[in-house]
Length: 87
Image (tube, rainbow, N blue to C red):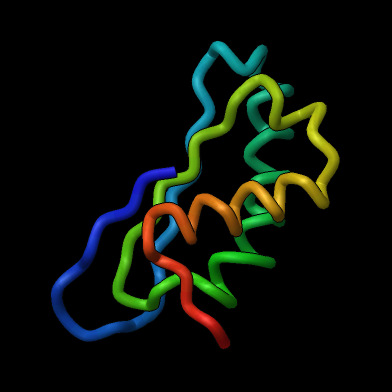
């Protein structure tokens, strides 16, 4: 995950998802992005800083990783990047 502070009015976090060909074929990449989108909705929209942009990068393990662990991974990444916000 990558973050960047965005100047201007805080309209909410902007989120980008990416999956390279290393993840797999088009079907695998789309599935990985869908899983990440659901995890991002659950974590970043509730706990991410509002004036930041986020880029979440899919890996091969994204498809096999249990969804509950994807949520924990995103939470840990936000905390590590100092972009965590308590509700």
